[in-house]
Image 1: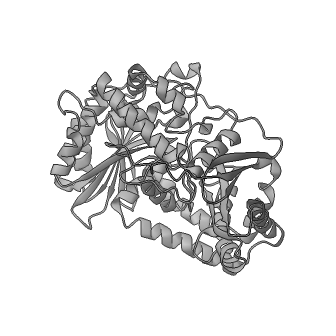
Image 2: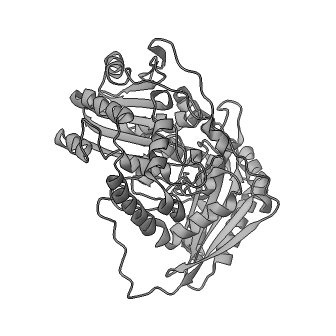
Length: 506
């Protein structure tokens, strides 16, 4: 699952299954997370920080560029002397390449009062350098037959291009240029801020489910930065200054906070030489101190009701659960992944079969859990009641199904079927060179080595019925639960239908 707000992409947004997806490139993030064998979900925003975040420093790199390691799967890692990490995965089926640059900074790193600054900088990154004019970056990639875009997430910011392999040096040159030489123009900032504000209105303020999910997360978390939307609170956008965005850029867009992932028809040694030529000349500097904010223990169920214009009621439940920290020692995150799949991980899984098809209690139900995050995880369930039924009935039915598993467990046959679905999904997603890069990047951003990606799949396959039963009994209590319910309000028939603002990339 993925309960992160992916603020990015080209085209219209479809939060799947949960609303707060702030952009259509969400499909890319879902691709990455399902490729790690994570199962589904989409959605929401955040921010965090404290004044102490703006002090001190990670050590400066000094080693020469050298291979860090390689696997039989054709993956090689290098670290440049300026701290930039380079990961190359060979896939020679077609003469194409995916070039991705990941900055380990997102909504989770924001200081309260400037939420949305990470996403705003993503927009400004297309506004030119002394060498590349406003909008020229995208035009140059398109002229070479490539595709490009970017995404801002609560945990990272990503820029990418998919293109013929012969143009990889030009992609590195373009990205290295804007890492170091971005122009901050007040007029461009003001124009782009209007686009971002309209983006927020379109995807959250004018979306009933988007509003519900944003309010849910603001209620789930008291102190942790995941309570803030990645796109930012509107008041923070209104009061944001160009200087805030430039300071963010100067603080975080440096080689020692970046990771370049290249997948496709390439030779690792040649890619390393290109990276040295274009990225190697960039200077590192100490990063701001990252300061984790941990939520106090929850001491009872939380409930909120949200009024918004909508045709149908809707409810969403979020349980606080652990994320994956130690690939070898952890057990519960793998069992939670499998539990999510048992409930709703394939077409004939329990909830869809029983609540939608057999009982006709719900028009739709969804489940999601994402074990791969920088911060803590949630296990989220949602549903829309069918005609003649209520959100209270949906909540009761979802709770009952989890308690049934906690009491009776799952059969070995059902577990075998679920695991087969997970493995098949993993293999399918790796058909894409872009997906392979996303798989590596999402893991690495969350301090899970790419070397352990296959091991994660093996650990999922080792989950037992007893472990699934144990997590169903352990975590799904009222003291871990927040429930948000949409109370539909009349829809104004005269209100114009919202349209994507002109110039919206994401």
